[in-house]
Image (tube, rainbow over all chains, first blue to last red; front, top):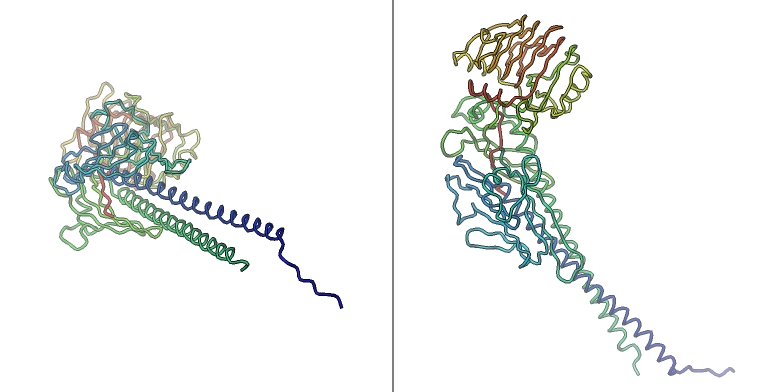
Length: 192
Length: 338
């Protein structure tokens, strides 16, 4: 009768098992860490995309209604036009006057220095986007050609030629290398 | 020693964390997809509303005010159809009077359109364009007939006085613009387009009958304003056909309530309106610096001779001063309502 041999766990087995376990755990930890980073990056990217979209939609909303003037009182659609800010006017309640303290006058202000795009209504400044790395407004005439904007902004005659407003917006999401950007051109809904 | 006492819990914990992370990433992706879908739906609805508005404005006949639109299809105010107008499919809305003074003429147009699962509403202020007529040299009440030009028609959309002025289309008519351009191209060498001539425009017919009534009410002169020498700017009405055999010139606004039949030469600066059609015989020539508006029961323009049409803002403005000309409807402003 052949004697039954019981195999004991030796030191080598333990070392190999420990090493395999360590490798497995390290791989798991790396996978979990990658998943965590992916989640954070996806969250940051999604937030950045939502933010620039919000900025674009806010400008579109205000630019489309610029110059709304049901009483034909002579509302000027673009009250201020600079590279870093644009102010729209509209007589939304049809009273024949434009109330500067209400939503009838809205300003969009870009500040790369503070990294912020804001929408200003009366004395209220609402940040639309933070982490702005590039931002600027451009103005197009009836032929779609850009109007040169001096440092002091467009004068009244030049503003009267404005038929569309363009916004270039770029954000740097925190923790990400790639930037998020949008360019939108919104035509004023007002015939010359 | 208890084997596996730490490995299994560690693996399960890692699995749980991974699953949680995966679920979070999936949820994030789902939210972004929903947001993107909502944005796409909102954009599609916005575009549909804008398209509806554009079609509604294009469907408003050129004229002087918008009272007919407020009165509705029955043409009477104070009836249930007041403010109702024909709109494209997928779009509803109606017109109402704008607040404030009656002049300049304008109305409020409320529209609602659905597309791509989204719905948008807007309110627009519609008025009349500042410039008379469509920006076209030849404005017809019906699509032109093929092979109507055996002679030559030259269309030059560049302004004779101001080369920097916006160029005009050669032709406007109630037809698809591409079809009009096909007609222009199909006439081959019989139609010559100047370098500054824009593509054809789709436009409602010229309101020739209303123009005739206004011209008659304005105490017009007759065909005597057409002279061989330097003409005076005048408002002229020719009741019936006008035959031109010699060489005549004119300026201002000429309304021919019949056929303009040219065997000689007519050179006119301003607006020529013809209710019975234009015939230019072989050897005849018609030159208009301004615009030619034609409505006719049969072929509107038959050219065996030569026709030259070129833009002249000065000529149009002079005619408009003599008699206010019809304007196209124009968007004066809008606001999104949601």
